[in-house]
Amino acid sequence: MNIYGRNVLLTGASGGLGQAIAKELHQRGARLTLTGRRVEELEALAEQTQAQVLVADLCDPAGLEQLVEASRDCDVLIANAGMGSDVAIAEMTAQEVDRSIDVNLRGPILMATAFAQAHMERQASGQIVFIGSLSGVIATPNTRMYNATKFGLRGFSLSLREDLSSAGIGVSIVEPGFISEAGMFATSGIELPAAVRKKTPADVGRCVAKTIESNPAEAFVAPIELRLAATLGSLAPGLSSMIQRRAGTADMTDTRSNS
Image (cartoon, rainbow, N blue to C red; front, side, top):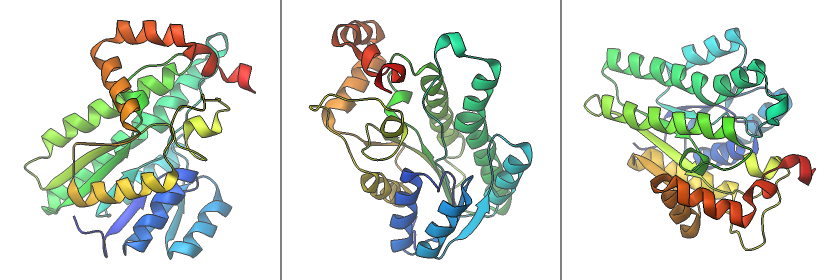
């Protein structure tokens, strides 16, 4: 799909990855509607990208309904909003579980469903892009809800793609790895070894643009070694677990010890 002139709805636009995606799509001529919870950040970004602003919280039923309705009228839906760091198991509550599911999984599913239904009714083409994570391919310690919701998002995306393949509606998922300055790992306080290579928010923005244009099932924003590790983890979770334990991954991902 050609991006120029398309109406794009982008969730999570007030965060670092969202801002990078918005700026890249603006450069390519998209007409943006930016959503998120932080008004000042959204308005500042909207000034730079000539975008409309829709302040909404995916955890709030009224806010979610606004976003679901807005999803029906755009040409491209980018489900980027997400929450990362898990609390310790001893502190985990039903409220924490619900919040993770609402933001990372339920909201994107309902928005994508509304988008698909409206476009099928109008017999219109469109593109849905989910922002997933390598954490939706391989599990790591201390990220159980993030893993659970990103695994679920990946499964929904790949299945929805097949359901809509004959309707002219593309569905893709973008899987970032470790991103500098933005995203779950950058904001969680996790300290990665110096040898671990990272990508930038701008890399994610460019990948999202390319994904809209070419409609792959899945696109990765990660160095080849991380992609191979994720593939190994998905094929052989027991071996991956053994490697992670020997490498001390649990200590690296424990934000309480890094704060």
